[in-house]
Length: 302
Image 1: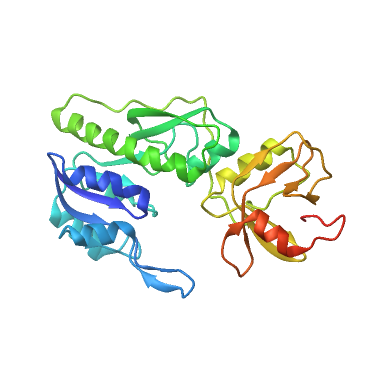
Image 2: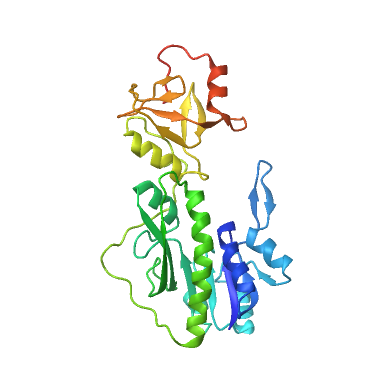
């Protein structure tokens, strides 16, 4: 089939790579416009744009898919299907109707669980033991379209969102290619999602990522892992932010937020810090950071 692939961040790259070596023809790539990144906030192309240009593909970067010139170009390309992986913008109905086989989205959850922008983070935060990826036909509802196929993935006890998403991106790429093969061969029909088991996964904001030390240790551990690598779990000490790397739970008991010998108190048992990133500084080992602080007795994270 002739494909226009839509995707933007790094987790979309395994799918693009898989499609480039599949029996299908990727005739163009749709991605978000260049965006500010890094400390200098200079404009940078998306990872998908960089890979597509390296492959010599036409790249479409409309500010919004409602753009008439963009829609005309998609019609001219005459794709049979448009696979989507984390594109990052809503596709209007007029564009959804262009390919005969529609737009097939790869979503990193077992739908209807965790519909929304941050399914992997919410799976880790909720303590799910199993998650996965789903291919479904895109429609106007939020991840509500009928399902073509799924693949499952165990959530390991120490998984960060980054760890889990990396595995899902690879497994999902194989699922996406298999789905497109089956569509072309006429051997699959999408099935409606069940009405039960719906949960939502909105974007986790920086404020959401602030650690509440009055919460149980298990909740703190899950929050830190869910927010790694982004947006990064954080707390404050002496009025300045401190980002936290993965933590481990202990049997020690301290008051919520209390700092002692690399441990921090929670509502239950204390957790042990591994890495930190103090405001305005590079990431470092928590032991090195704490050694230089000269904490006063009773000092605590807020």
